[in-house]
Amino acid sequence: MEVAAVSAGLELSARLRLVLLDERGVVQAVSVARNWFGAYPEVAPLGLRPQGITTDPGVRLNFRGQAGQAYHLRVENYALAEDRVNLSATGFVPNPSGKGEALTSGSVQGAIEFVGEFDRYDVSGAGGYLRFVYAGPLDLVALLYNGPDDLYPRALDPVRNCAPVSPATLLVVRDRGLARAGFDEEGSGRYTLELSSTPCP
Image (cartoon, rainbow, N blue to C red):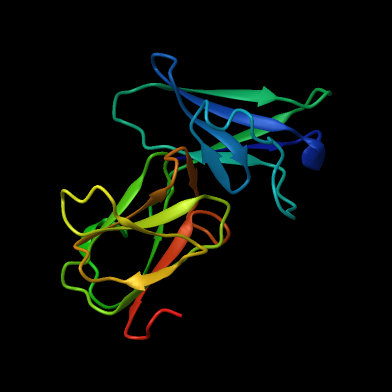
């Protein structure tokens, strides 16, 4: 489910925040900007204004609901003026990549769309070089594990984004701090993994 709050009064001057709580009142996610959100309290000190050049004055967040469980949405206004807000909730199909499938050649596009999400790929049959491509606002990292007991996986990120895939058996993509998530769209939580025979620079 994606929930969104869009200012109807202050528009681009709005300073809105959405807080999603479970039925016990425990915070599950907090909107931070148009294209990413996070888990409280890690994001509390961060800016609340939408980031980047956009005509969308709204904030959003994604969550996975459980059947029969109640959720509460709190809309907070940090502007110095009253505001009217339009709320919407829409279902969506999460990006299907990263559920443990084998990655042996070519490329795959995945997305970190939920707070605490891990995308997993079996790379035990892969060879060559892995490139991790991401340019969004999250701190995504791709971790190459040589086995289930590997305590020190090789890390790829948008700066150090290429490594030989062998002898890794498992690849995990996640937010480095497990505190933020984005959306399955350009400039948000979407990443690309590429396997090729071209050596790293």
